[in-house]
Length: 605
Image (cartoon, rainbow, N blue to C red):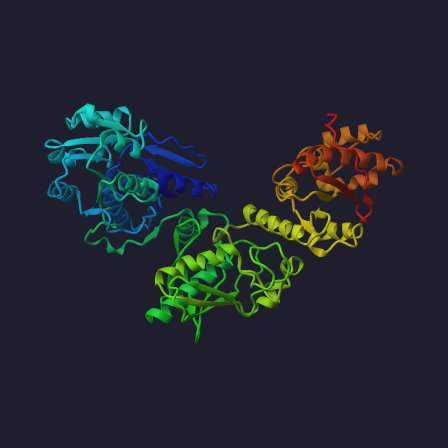
């Protein structure tokens, strides 16, 4: 069981990621002010001291702690660390993403240091954006200077301000005005804020002050983990995003997630490039390197080294991916050009080449997509040196023959891909992304029609109907018929043929635009009503598979039934294509095509 300490934006992110596992856990917040919906988690409210934490962990068999509390919740951080030490529990710190510290603000070690610096700079009129909990810490300042403090407009916060004897007419509220409006209204000489990270709106506050031409004083975030003698043995994993959290949980408590995540080829290539660069420029050979993902979070990736390259072994987790176990290499050299931010990315052995339009880059370019290229550049630019990066994949050409690459016009190897940087097992997002890419290539092929079908078997049959269309015009939708048609419409594809076999067709006719078995089952009652409409009522009590209908329906009634099925499918599907022209082919067990295509009409049921 997992125990999470939250109550913050980070706490919500933890909950969202843990809920995906479908396993139980506990989520603890000091107050009940955070409204959050839990399905598998149990929400605990009320602050716990160390003794209560210890008793709770013992009573509920807690095996992992996640600290997602506010970075300035120092007492809680200390208690959590002591708890992990005393109970011998692993600890994950889910932290915020912090912008780099800059010298255009005044950095303060703590609130006493802030008071000293404010007074030494002659600040007599201040807007405080550090919250109600800091009013008492700033008493020595506001008791002698004009000070406005922004707090949450709720009774608990008002009570704390009153207890500290802060004048209520100098309180301002989050709900009333944003930082620029408050600065414009009260004309402070400076603002005081905390190093609260991206989710705390730190950059927005600093930007507003700079635009108004006033000074900024920032209280530095406390050190994490707290310095506690004897607690150095705690197994601590630090993450700052949902992907890193999931991977840490999968490592520390493998059974929590039924299926485990993996890394995209883009993340592997980026990690290898970072390691090769550190080796080249710094003489280092770390066994793990930090990789900044497209969402801004950082994860750690294991790396290895060859004679003149660094490499990462591709891990797909529990996702069925033919690239699992492939070695992704990066060889890095310095460029002589004077542009310090130039990062040249080249495809080497085993990386495919685009031969058709429709991708992020023109034909002739290596099949390294936009997101991985941006990842590599973002992670290497801080080195401040122009670099040439060669990405290669031994065995890439061999493996590519077992992927979609040949039909997409990618020759000679695999693609370096990945939008998020992480592969979630059996990811719906990844599959839809691949459909979208196939549709883009189909459009770019210049074919006057795109034919969508469920898989290899149905594609083989519909190809016979359109023998002159190029391979790229045939796109597999799997079960995502509705989403595929929507994407075709968004891409401006005007002519679409939908090839569908009877098992999916009867679901589609009933309005199930996603025909996966986990989304819905065959509706015998609906099929019976379609049979009635076709003038061939049947007893369906023994029907277990839709394809058995081909044997049950009298041959003289087959076309009438197909007409009805296609009509209902059209009623649900045609509107998704907008002003495009949809044709539906109903495919029989032996590949016979039933091309009856009445105009879209509402269902008669």
